[in-house]
Image (cartoon, rainbow, N blue to C red; front, side, top):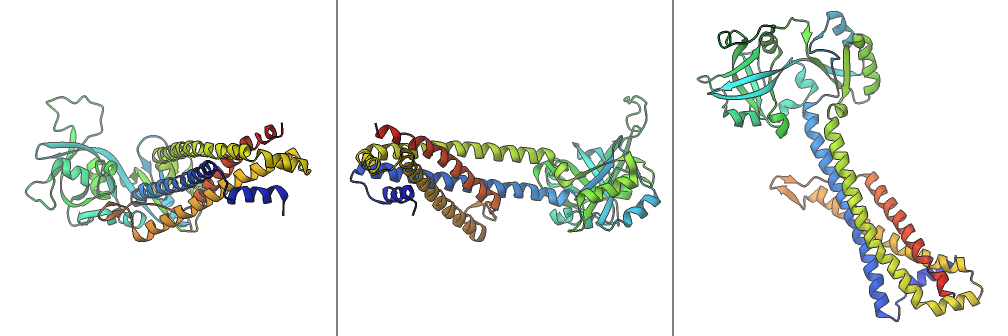
Length: 400
């Protein structure tokens, strides 16, 4: 066995004659345990919150979205549709029309976006599964599906034929709108509300859904004019390769974004929060490792006579330094591993038995990710290495 490692193990696991040293060592080990434990718990919690937040976008945002690079209108010919049908990696796609509209209901007003969707939309997105009241769109009559936020703001009920929801949008033109031509300046339609969806607060206040024919009629668009195309890809398909094939069909007319790019702001915010939390808890762990430094220095002072004996028996200063360096590393790694194992057990229990609940029906979201385990181990090892190296350097002064 390696001589410094053998002595380091003896010093770490053998009870010292001084109770103060034993207490300091226990406090240092508990500090490392608590730091590793809390760091993994927080990282797993933020991973769960990240996936939980992004799960809402999975119901609303497609795998890929193609929209005009300039302007609001994307002209799609029959030939281009046929070419899209031949791309093997595309499972389904839906052509949509989207525009800002003005809603009016019983003298209550709200500005929103209408999203006219075709019959394939339910095969591309899961928004229909987010309908909490009523039903998804049918072709029986002009109808819309509102977000829960819009429904509350306007106090709109379902299938209220006595009070229809009024949708208005400015007609295209360059003339100035005055009080005398106010009514004629807007295209106005009245619709029945068939359903209410709930995804998240932002989307619930922003979008209303209608059939694409209704949206086209409201906006006075041609049959070949759309706002975007949304794609659902096959599981094995490459988003990058499919994007290139779509660009080859439409040329430079379109801009294509993935789901992550559509939620770029949300992803940046979540990544920033995760980084800041990691840095804060790493700082806490660094402070805890000062206890390791203190424990090693106190041990060096206590073992001064033993150090001189080992030196006289032939141990080199570097070997003596390695004894206390390895002692610090053992303390750090053991405390960190035990803390990490306990944290993993707790996360697994939360995932399976919902120990902590946000609401009676919603458990606190956590995720077990291998990268979080690696992050904790690397952080503990790196900080432990630095702390042990600094503390072990004091051993040379004991030889003086």
